[in-house]
Image 1: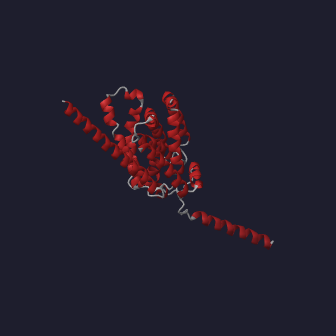
Image 2: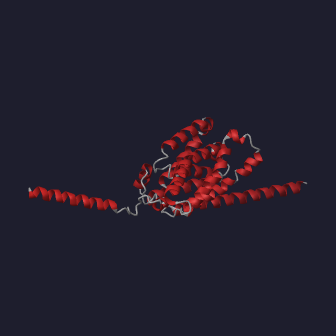
Image 3: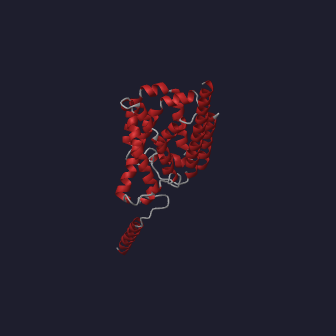
Length: 206
Length: 80
């Protein structure tokens, strides 16, 4: 967790400082990430264990619950890029474990966290494809927005996938994903209160 | 306020992680070693050797056979 949390902080800092170059040279970054993932996909390492992808996803998740600020604004500018990079780093993890399960364990005898992770992968795939700007431009904004609400399901599945590994880090995973759920809940509640006030004000004016 | 709480939360998490997780384990993970902290449970199910111990007993048998052969050779040399 030490390196995962460190990576989360580093990604956040880099995104805060270099949000413009990240946005501008995103395709170079995607290619670089893809090459790194391709080179390191064979062995068990930080990327194939899925922690690199997880770090990117934690930044994407928590940027969504930040209060309005420069930090939130800058992270939002590169949110799609970070999500795409995170997914690229998750490919070797997903494919590696699918290979292990098919070759060594058998599809029906894998642990529960494998199936949850697989489901997360299935849900991530359309989100990944539609996060590319050239695909997004071809879609209706409402449709795109509706589809990307699946990101919340992805976060839940990733959280459960990690918690069900049932290792020493289980408590930390519960803290991270639990605090996200609480913060998101608070945010939704705040939004509802603000919206109700606006509606009331409109009624009073009329 | 919430932003500060999130930043403090991650710094606290970093401190907790550095206390609970030996630095060697994190470094090993970069190299691909399965350690007590990085415990992909699926490795154990898949038959990959884990920190629980290698269950392959054949390797020990080979060592014993090798030792026996060595002893025989020594005995033959002594006879000469």
